[in-house]
Length: 177
Image 1 (cartoon, rainbow, N blue to C red):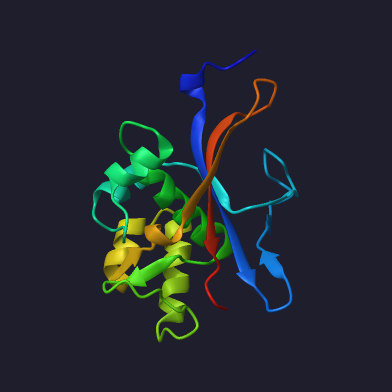
Image 2: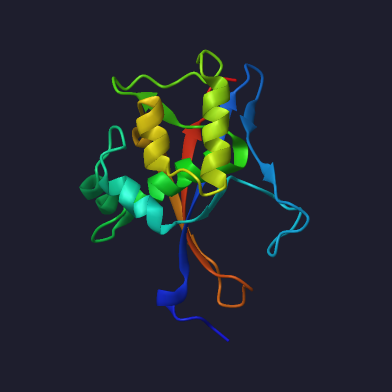
């Protein structure tokens, strides 16, 4: 049975790349073997756009991109910036890499931060639903580096797929590690 387009969940995925000096490296994460969909598969970090992503996009926690510009890029009327937020959130939740900057716009270096354990705890709290992404940004005085994600592609899973997603793909340079 084919789902109507309005029931297809919006999703966002980020393709993280870095130049190792010899090759271009691409980050993939392995889905758990207990996952209800694509168990054990290697995938780019990403997932569904959550209701909280819309509120974070509207809260001023994004750097270098506003909703009007993001929506134009995605060819949607409004709330396009929520896809950038979802991609950043999913990357942090799934891979532990936070694409964020300080209030001046400088990308954070997770290894140079004095509060690495605080950021790791915030990630655990975010995954557990004990903290929102907006609260994480406020606590650490960060803004999401939306301007560092380049909109790359838009795929909608075919009607025969067991789960359908309307996925926006972004590409970004991986933070140093």
